[in-house]
Image 1 (cartoon, rainbow, N blue to C red):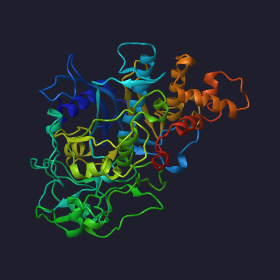
Image 2: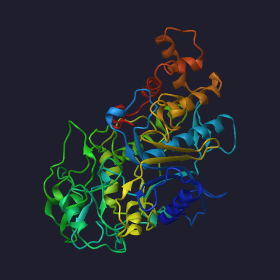
Image 3: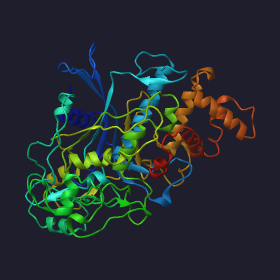
Image 4: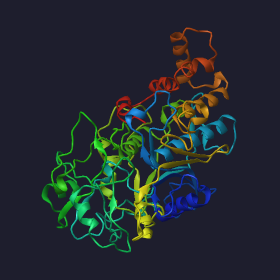
Length: 506
């Protein structure tokens, strides 16, 4: 059907061939991270879930993002015209929402090439049953998924995850895997292990990987010992040994900080430094951020879907990811499962159609050429400090202006005087996605709107001082004064998991 290497290669080729030089790292000086959503569709007459033999499929990148940064709390704006979080995974997901909006436009215009089909209720649509979406990231998501034990005899903290499922969906993933290859650890730059590793000679595999400092660098964390059902990693933390007898010497540190007011890390030396399964915010340099870690956001998407609250008005079911593929880097199957869906198993009382999705997790052997590890290897002993790229690139499979390059949350080149003007907004900012949603509404006659929007119109007309407003004006009555307020007005009307929404602020 497909393999992890095929997904990674497709994304790397798309990055190299379809994205311009603007926004990419400066050679031998900067690095970045890459994420994408890939649409998987069987050729005519086949289905993605068939189990009677190989399935021939077409693979298409429908959204892509790069980036390593997020803004501090003091720079956030109520107007919704700034990108709070520009980590690659978040950029790719917001670009995917832009793609979905375009596809709903096609569906509303009754175009046959849309990914959506009419649903069973008025105004609602559903995804074509033969389509799958695979999420790719060139590196392990920051936060809980990056908390991986280090074993004293291993080159990498764990073996690459299984690739069997992509070729044969009926085969369950397992841990009987080949030996790891990537030797470098992604850690807190101030941890004793990192300092020690900086003294080690460089190898052809690359050099020591640091993972924190307000950009999307990943690092170590320890397993949680509070559960009565300990995983292999948690057992390793408690006993200092894995089930196979290997000694755990430390864990990869993550720069993501525990959410204030909740449980925190123990910060004990070695493998007990972190606690796993906790919600975390991305780190900032001086100015604390309000952006949840990418592990937390992926977990949220595996419960609520990737479409967002606005688009859910037009969908019968949420849009879920079927698999997550990670590029060549330190990665743990067990940590990924725990972070992306294992810790969500107690989530209940969800609306019909929603549920915790146990996505398939795979890893590729292909290294992203502009990752920290790859650039550091090429750089070798060249002078100068290697730094994360300050720009973020968004690309969507849409016909008009598919590319968007930002820095510090605004389109690259925006000046202080330009902030607040329409041209100073990213196409995937909250306010611009809301305006795209507004355009979608205007392209559909009111008698074909879904019931949830009809209810919202009645509520907004009653709450406003102008009950004679048109339907579009009523639905978007707060937009001119406060775009984000309008966005939230829709979001709160149909948010299936409000407490998680509050925790996972965009």
